[in-house]
Image 1 (cartoon, one colour):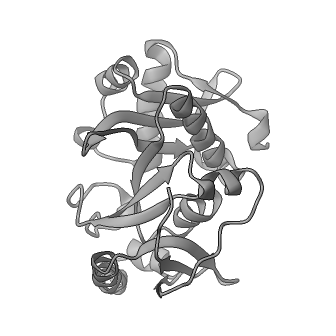
Image 2 (cartoon, helix red, strand yellow; image 1 turned 120 degrees about the vertical axis):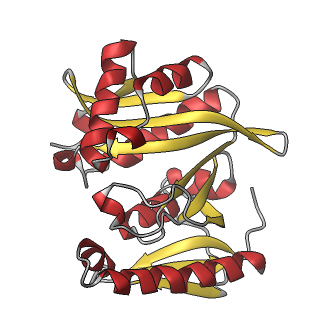
Length: 250
């Protein structure tokens, strides 16, 4: 299976919206009270958001869900969820869903999409920054409270805010096959690959918490100082490193 064998299109009708809700449950394993309900998927599609599905035949194997937002008089799309069924991961499908979202957003006059992601998720950070060209200048503390999802490992739901400036030179160059623009690295913030293992066990969770606490303070200070995440590195062992510098272009 390759990502190219799967059709990406907007979801249509209640049955496909219900499939999104079911896949959300499968991927995050939330309790029912924490699930985004069917009605919100339906409303999002009707008020200018996005419910985009990835289909293998008639089977929904991934989706991206966005709602419209406004900040400081600037309209944008906020991508709240992107989910891919486990056996379809690591084949470029998440990136294809994001690129479909971008094409649709540009066609409707948006120049910005945002979403949040866990600073401890190394693969996701690499995709967002190096493969899509998003930048980061904001850090939200415990955004959703302590959730029921095992993926969070009982830690506070701290989130970085990805800004995807859809028509920026940075994004257009990267998506056109070019390299990410170079910049002066002023600061770096590291994430050890062991953090995934540490989160899964109560015996080692404090080690993951220590990484989160340390990085939280470093991000908050760096953003106060006017820095932005502009790059991300992974080493051969899978450790991650955020690279921060000055952002002066949209």
